Image 1: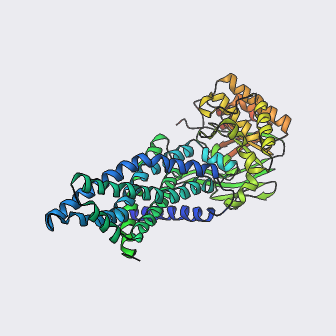
Image 2: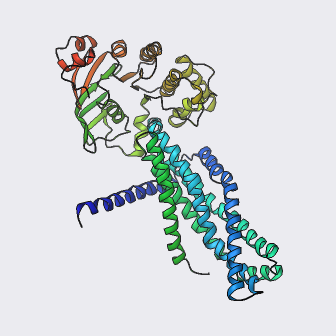
Length: 259
Length: 248
């Protein structure tokens, strides 16, 4: 391997190391006092409550389109009348895969980028230095409340998205396509397991930590003025989205199909 | 009170500090002068532990601070107050919350006492009744004064000023210089002022040190600096384009 090829690999491992160190510091500081309650509550609102409109929209249209394709699939390959068996497939697909990923990607775009922009601006205007000079370590003050807020709110948003998505799938099949309501509901309740929903929520919690750590890491390493902050926000969305998709596959692979 | 021994710092290929040695006595105001980009702010950030040196030591009241871990650092930073170049007020907090920030972390005072100290600190810098304003509602000069109020609120022993007169008009700059002298007189603090403004340096400094090419080239009283035969110092204090210091 020549030196040119080695450098990007070195850079990758260096960045991986930086993220690992920040994650380690965050975990260590998560249980230490003082707790930044005000910041934590503000983050809960920013990540959770303010994400509700965008999650509602994406989950509703995700549920609708998933309902549409499932209806088409059953209608085409099994035959008319079989569409009511799509209920559990829609619910399982949404709760285990689609909604956690959609919530992760939406929050990465909306919240992760905002974290990188806010912390990056603090970095280039010396506010991070001011924090240190005033006895506040940036990790417990900035990173810990954001990470815990993401860890808490992503599963909540996912559960909310699951309900909206499943309702949208039900609405498409039953009200728009005339599928038998009783069979659709009976099959959904019969075959959808609690683990399907819980595994989606666990994924969402992991995505939450990924988004917060990457957003804070990019913000803390921002330099070079407005351009640096812009780069940090873009990088956060790109890196967090890729990590979410990769982690999703591995978690799907590792998690048992049912408990 | 402050002792810097053989301090080195590089950023990538760029060697910023190349063996800085300096001592600051208790109660004195030391002005560190030098060109823009000469590493003055970098030196200041080492004093408070924001940056770690590649080599060398810093002693505060005889205690070596360069090897302290993050958790131990606040014991030392408590002794310092710092006025940042752009004030570095926290945008998301009100003026009152900015000024009380250090008090809440460094002391266990009641909220009433903290509010009283916030009002007193703001009054010291000539600002009253602005606790509920946000930083974006303040002018540049007011921001600097709030930054100073924040730095003195918990009564530190040492105040670090990073380019206190930069970015404000000469009248406000002089008002800041007056404040630096007032803090020294009233609070008996030790001060380190980083500046390239000679008017400001002469007005506030008991002693001055010139940082050039990563080293302190001379330390002395303002008179000694003025009368120095060192060509680097003469070029800098008279602001001449031609001389041993490269322009660009």
